[in-house]
Image: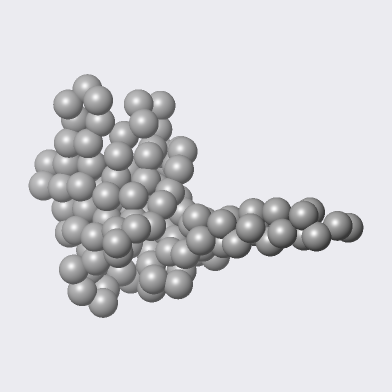
Amino acid sequence: MNRRHLLCSGLFFGLLAVASPSSAKDAGWDGVWEGTTTKGGSIVVTVAGGQVSYVFRGSSVQVNSASLAGGKLTLTVGAMNGVVKLTKSGASTASYSYSDSSGGSASATLQRR
């Protein structure tokens, strides 16, 4: 293995570690976050071991991407690439907002259980 290969590999894996959803664990996001939107839709967001799942109104919704920046956990979800934003408002609470390109929106306060 030459030095260039080692340098490129190190850079790649370093960037992967920074961009990985497992960073959500480091920021204290691990857990099950639940709540109900102001319109009555139930929400469950689970963060565990670098994996994120999203359930809305009892149905699992595909998580297309997840990122953590500035203390906010942002997900793109479903076929319409809806955007879910979670922002911690306390040790066990987070604000939730959802929006999509068709004008759909929702908000809630989630509790970690």
